[in-house]
Image (cartoon, rainbow, N blue to C red):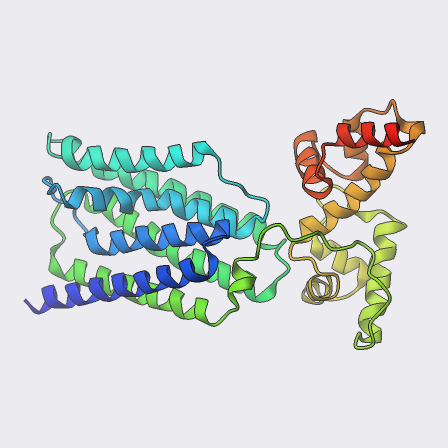
Length: 354
């Protein structure tokens, strides 16, 4: 009886914190894609807290199955949340919703038909392997894009949120795969509910300690200028000297053309620590992402080439790759995001204006 009461208390606490977090996110960040996905993730996590148990039963009630389906579909939301959190250019497409629906529907069907038909083990293993796959995608997104983030507090918080959620979800999925349909007992479920409550509380506390605008930046901010204006009075001479050296690397040596150039390599050329270069590009030049900083320089070079009558016959792909882009698709998207038109349209407009 005591364990049952503790489990219910932990579940209720986790659900309450998640609903409060949902309300806070909805109030402040519902207009931002990452904020909307965070709201969906919090609601799905509340469904998980209310429905999850280690050692799934063969028979699930009709009211319990939708909660389990929402809980399972939440791993797809988690993946999309990390995409939006780490990639300012990420946009939702119809197929993202289709992926979530497929996962949720499969979980629902597993609860009401596959598991009761004598295939409980198959249903449990398949559902949790799907969860592990989406968690792996989220972790990969965290690893591959983390270094490009220039907002230091946001980098630390993002990694904390993703690692905490991924560790909890991944360990539970693995546990379900190995436990299968066997009963795990009240002790395991009470411990699981307590750990979930602690993870939720830790994430909520961490989010309250950072400015929400750092985590969920407002959309459609104009790109910062590449070359800063005259130094302001408060700018330290040492920082300005480094900015001048950085701009020489970009304008004279065109270091942005190098394949797979990293912020660490750039810091090495300037003989300064990587964290200091991050701070300079973010706080002095106004960039939140290192790849955006590089791409703006590449796009400026491409704009000059596209407007040059002497290069009118040079293919767009050649201009893109000369500027440092690795393929045409990313170049077209980045170019249109900055200029509002495609490279081909930009070239035609400049030719007509000449």
